[in-house]
Image 1 (cartoon, rainbow, N blue to C red):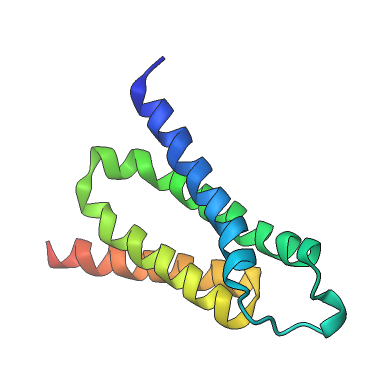
Image 2 (tube, helix red, strand yellow):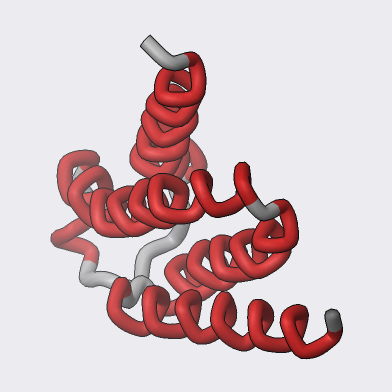
Length: 113
């Protein structure tokens, strides 16, 4: 087995686990009704962001390994995704803003070089 595949799997698995576990552990305040305050509802609410982040890592890591100039747009996209999701709790808005941030940052860096 190629070690790159193993490291990629471990990285994606860790990110996925942390995005499911940390909201439960940190008890981040939700904008939902009090009836959805159970442990199971918080776990299910965080699955969407974990899936998006796992896809972000899986889709961008091979590009970063071949072209290190793509790390900054990826980090900005990931940061926007995390911040926007925890502010709005909207997967759709977070994903779109993250993609926009990635694209704009990549375009600015490509024009600068």
